[in-house]
Image (cartoon, rainbow, N blue to C red):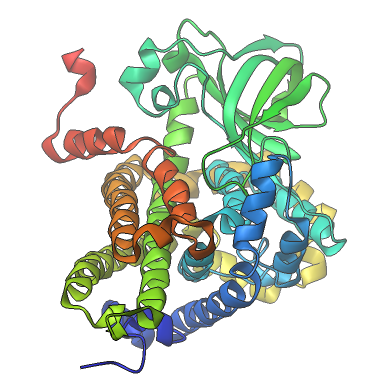
Length: 486
């Protein structure tokens, strides 16, 4: 029996979270504004993905293949017009006030259309997450104001987070591996701050960023005990982006090697003191691993949707390819994997809003302060200066420690480490299945299947390779201590 419409719900509805993630119906009743905003963001993402991203994905990928330094600034300006890069900032500070769930639903749609272009926007928030983890109110206010002011002028403001070492990326994410590592970079204490020397690699936005969050030890022979975190201005003398990588996939998102030669970082830009760098990095990772799981989900959805569209139009032996039973079975297998994984990932995003550092921006005290304070006052230099005073910073730090306790970080690392490999592995499996369905034609550029294959592979590797995540889950579920075993 032939079907006249595509069979995949994700292709045909503006928003489907109430049907596919039943818990959202309960949240809608309890928190109508919260879910209402998420639904609006989801619709916005679907429209933006289809009208702006999908039409330029293959051409941008081609241009970036020819010239890795090419940036689709026209696309980024369209994203700025829609206020996407500043969407998570409070409304009174020039943003849209989006929650993690809202931004995640927007991102899922953008990724399903093209992860390269989506990453150009979404990865720019990783360093902002690092600022939220640090949560010095004056620093956070300054960064938000700076980004909003620049993007209102039409100037893209890129961030970077530099954690990966030339000798190994995984070493920077686990205490046992870090203790045995020998990083390239080192920070030397000098009067008024630190001098950074060495090389970092695979830094997202490394050649575009104006500010980069950098992990570096003050003694490379003892990286675990001396790891620190710094905020570095790329305009500082001695900083250089030495190479933009010609990558296999996600080409529209820049990745660069960066070099530090006596780069001075003032004391106030020390975000985590020596010995606290790994803790700071793991707090960031406890949030961002869930974001990489979202990438795998978006890629899986994207390749399945392209395959359903192709199979609905392709005629074989007098009928459509989509009408063949083996195709039903192959696609059904992917759909049954997508639905529970999507529920787990959206659960992670909701938990970020109610249980992680985002609570610092979305809590009764902050909400009241934003509601009763005029926007002009909130964005004034006076408030920024007052928020940096010792008593204020001390109170905020105390609250933040309670909100983002070590137990919270461990729990989010555990869940993030479970859904990230599940999602990225599914993306690679889905591309293989869909390529089999379409056949040799699917490996040509015009359908975008081979591009998703190239884009998906890195999701098994970055933000910690899947092997590390599985060991993380084992360690936390079983209570196994690798430090004691070594």
